[in-house]
Image 1 (spheres, rainbow, N blue to C red):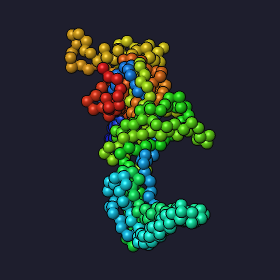
Image 2: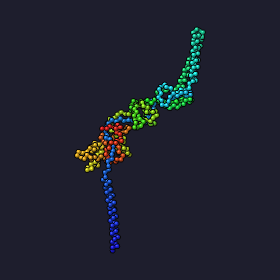
Image 3: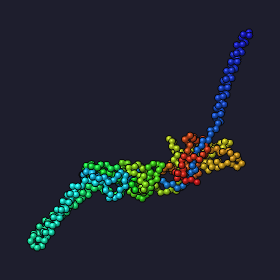
Image 4: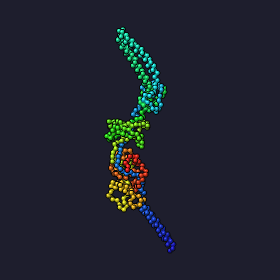
Length: 408
């Protein structure tokens, strides 16, 4: 009998152990679920911007090409051997300064011979006039002598003009480039010698959409830069093409830009912004605050969390505009008699907006926000509607001050 009791006890103990393990696992899983269900996520730090209407200067952005108002490639008009190159690369040359001397020994000799013959022609003309006055010579002899004298003077002028073409001079004051010729080299007519650029004043050619034609005028100021972060040059529009390109629907515009330090160079790519008239009472946000999705553009607005003891009205949508940033600001203030260390609970509310024009780091918002709304400008990539947040504006990647946004 005893040998049957021992196995039964062992079976009962094993069964109790199994039931205990199963019960413990069930209790553990339920405790973990309850913990995560009731656990509050830590508030995410975000940077914010309080919406205020203010002045905004819209701009039309374009891409342009810089060139010198006076810039040419100098070439020779006649053939010859290079005798002298009286300049060096990147040298500032005054107007009329010599740049190239071709061998002109033959032209000089021809001029000397022609001038000697011109003296003889003048003497022959004087003798013919004297004889004609005395009635000895014929009138036709005077005419022939005069024609021969004038022809010789014209030949001398031609030889002198050819000799002047052997000397290349600067047509205006500017900076020369790298010489493309060498001493002793034979140059054919039309050979390019060097480039000459006046870098003190530049021009930029760019195009704008035809929709902006009514906003573009001659004399309108522009800003110019080589990068988006350095728009430091200023100028004004000097010409607008009256014809719209039917292929691209773009308008060609030209502007003049001062370049006293010579930082702009011909051929450079440039970012152009045409400054439009200022507008009042415009709501603007940093472009970092705007989030685009398949359902539309939206921003996250900081709102006070619903009272736990008093559930929020279910009829109000999550992105309703009824609770503004004023209530968020009130919630941020500690209540009278409350513990000063207790921070108010704030949540991120998704609000769909209608963006308008963009200018630099700023985007216009035509619908969806109002004055006083506290909009999240950084940190919203890890947020979801209703997520707890805390305002930390000590670091503001949006650079609201540099962007020119209105602030309190």
